[in-house]
Length: 378
Image (cartoon, rainbow, N blue to C red; front, top):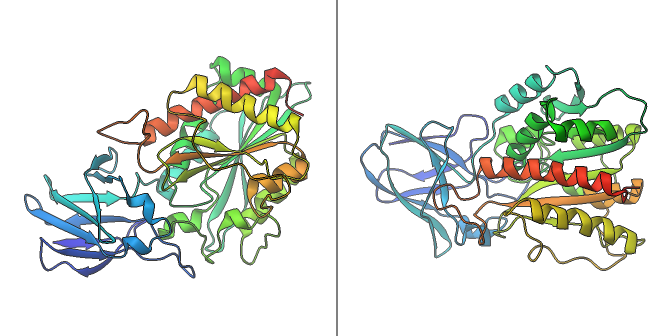
């Protein structure tokens, strides 16, 4: 048996792989950080062998409850990611697996590699109504990309921003973004036409390229949690946020959706910015409208479960949505998707998946269209 991680997003440490019935592994923490939970590794040479794997440090992960009622993702071709029974026993993540092929990949969720990101943004710019802008460099020297979908006309347009994958291990966020990009590329779509008649859409498909390539769960190359850097970002520690915040200041922001994944909660939900000091009836109406439209559009989305709303005056202004809503007086929301599966709409084969993330993305664009048409947007 051979276990390897020397590829984009790979993460695991081998403690002992000498016994097929007791393969001992550990998840490597993010660089300069105690966060860990994301894993992605390849097992070769175990075809036909009944193997038992133990991730020894699961209990110390950033969100240990995320491993309860969780099923690991596996793939032979790195395209189709299936689910497999997994247990949390005495603080260890344990699963038994007999490979049907010579090589099999395991991951916390279906990976979204940087090469696929590069193909996505390169393809997006092939349509006339999309512009690709390189905002700058990350600490590892990677490109930070922004896509703007826009049609030239005389209307006073709203400026709508969507960002994803501030936390690199939340790969469902970029699967969501891929479907969003593909929909907006389709100029024959009535939804796309209606949106671009009324707004410019600015997308940052991957806010954290360095963490993505390094196999991090939650931080960038400097060990910074980007969604706690929005109050005072710096080019030295969090250039990704600094550059995107600067770009937002140039266009203004009338709407922000920040796309994430939640390790522990088996639901799709939205968190608002109720903790802002000036939160009032109008802001509540905007938030409720968007969520209520989305729940009618997509059976996987719900409004009963999620994060508790913060009391007014207690917002964390280091977070993207609170900071942006405060600066631009706009509706700003965090969309959360599960690593596990949705309890109300489970899928035994795939769990929550790239495909379901993509369907939710299209529903979110439809809800944005309804929100613009409602006249509730500032």
